[in-house]
Length: 430
Image (cartoon, rainbow, N blue to C red; front, side):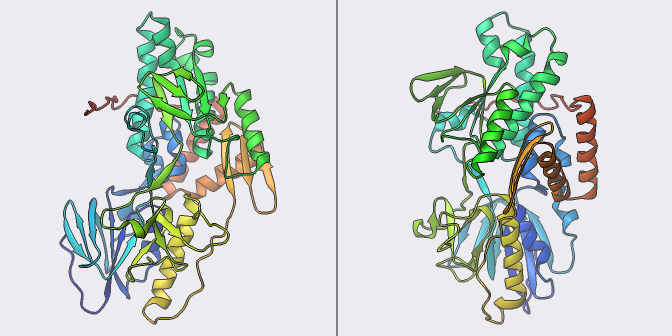
């Protein structure tokens, strides 16, 4: 990988430039460590706003920022664009598509991937939304299917092309359903006057549990349910999706929905790299102690979605797989490395501080759960916008996102409804 070997300082390899990995790379002291950050992309993605890219609200460069620009190439820091295939824990080496690399300390921050729970048909035919390419594929599919519906006289096919099924009633599913409902009400009828959008287009939100937003309060869940119903979203609770063949969504209790657009937001799992054993992993996440160190390997740590902290009385099933725990773990581990690791000093166990949970439902509609109070409606929506705006990486991204939101607020206009790269599904290998 063309990285110099230094004798005086230890080498720290960080795999993954998501919220956790990027935060740690920024905070680590360059004088103490040689830092190598590896990611399969050369940009950091602000995942909470992926749904806006998918629904033509924002361009992808509004939520992505160059890793090299975030962390300038200072002394003892290196970034390499690579995919890590295997970790040899005995030899302390990682193997990638561009070569192998030795490490003194290894930080796993690979984040999460979509969990299809073993259903191969759903994995092949449905649309996930965990990355910018996936969000762009979804945007193209939405627009292509409306264009295709103009060309057919088959009413059944037309409705199938205009039906949308979102599986998963968490924040991503709720936000996506709200965005599609607003497109149906304010935008698509003007783009496609030949189609009876209001009558023919249906948006279904399917949730396996008895309510939406499982990780939020009952009050917020009920408010989100009401807001989505008012926007015309069809919500089915206690509803388990069994299969999907690209045309028909099969649900338990012998229910079906005909749709060419099924979006899967029903679950995620840790992105495990080969090289770990079964005893190192729980629920697709690497087991770590209260200091985020692997239980088995003294020089391997895990942070973010991939980390499963054991013996935490507040989060016995692992911390939420969201941005805030990842950022806090990145900060904690950087502090541990900077001041405690080499001196063999003890540090307090990692404790996640829940700063609140929020979800937007649409224009002037959102819900926020904070420690001592809850908000809904316009004020919650303003807070949601502010928090997401300041969390974006880069001044330019913040300005562009804000300008887009202001224009859309007053004109109900999404200017990026463009099929730049048409989506074609890869041929299924049987």
